[in-house]
Image 1 (cartoon, rainbow, N blue to C red):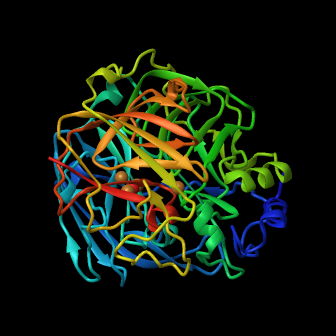
Image 2: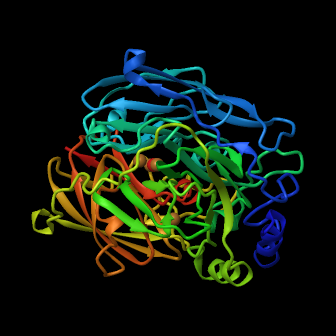
Length: 492
Ligand code: C2O
Ligand code: CU
Ligand code: CU
């Protein structure tokens, strides 16, 4: 088995120690899969009177049974609770900021108006709180929440601020999907981190980590290094979130078993789609069903990130064509298991480009471009700005105006490297990707797409946003977003 150190040293030789990853003495040399997969606390909003309290605060968390390291969390030492919301309910979120710096909480994937979206305009100052009331009216899906503070998203997420949201509309029981939280319905939050020798998180932006996004040498799942999940002997549903700052994961099982994708970002697919490997990019979610009826233990692993730009792809692939272990599954549970894969799920309406009222183009450029008039993009100690259509993000500038209730075709182009493009307040269907039709598992509703060269999206706008509280669209590589690869639109 490949050890963590071989992997780290291999990458570091070419990429340069302390550049894409810094500090590596703090991590485990070989994964032993002895840490049980941490299952974040579930908050079922309906059972709490539809009022959910989230306290963003500094904390301490131990990643290696070593001395606890400084972290951030939402009412937890790291990450936050999984929040279950029922379609049709109105839920009050009570966000308290005990961080000592400005923050916001964005409900990534929830269809709510701009004023409740938690983007960079809804700042929660230290010691203050924010109480949006969210009307939940969207199909079953896996969403998430994370900070969106101006120029400080990457660091805040890296330090631990992120959590999952389950939107429930009753289709789980209709299709007899695994739905017992923590047993056969598991949150899987994938991230990568680097640790200092004392076990603390290292986040030090440099010009290269801004260019490629910050990469860690150690993968964590729900905050744990190399965990194990004991699962029932049947179908298990994994709600996978790529919560990394920049890394794409190429997931497969060590025995190359087939598994089924049942949902993408914003909703279920028409039917389970069989795959053996699944790429997931920052911000994306997929729900998959894995069949453990054969009772064999298996490792989830990930391949080298091929989207690290020309230089990175060469380096990573040449040195380390191997997959590295992420976590282990052991089918030992006694819980009664769901056995049958549903034949059909929720067929999304046909994606009809003829309904589009217009077409816009967005060029995501991680090369050098001019700072905006505001001139405040020189931050993070790295004199890089990143652009969409030649313009770096300016909170005072509205870039696009769309009409609520319409659909448009958005053509997105990537320059420099592949960028995971995300739109707030809307979801979309992929019409084409690199000029080809999307694979079956990318044919449903989404809100993030990894654009290697070009993607053509059919975007449905049905939530309002004013110039005071516009919606964002941006690259979900958090360092790119912080460096200005973000625009904003009004929807009225
Ligand atoms: Cu995950 Cu602006 O979003
Ligand atoms: Cu979002
Ligand atoms: Cu990007």
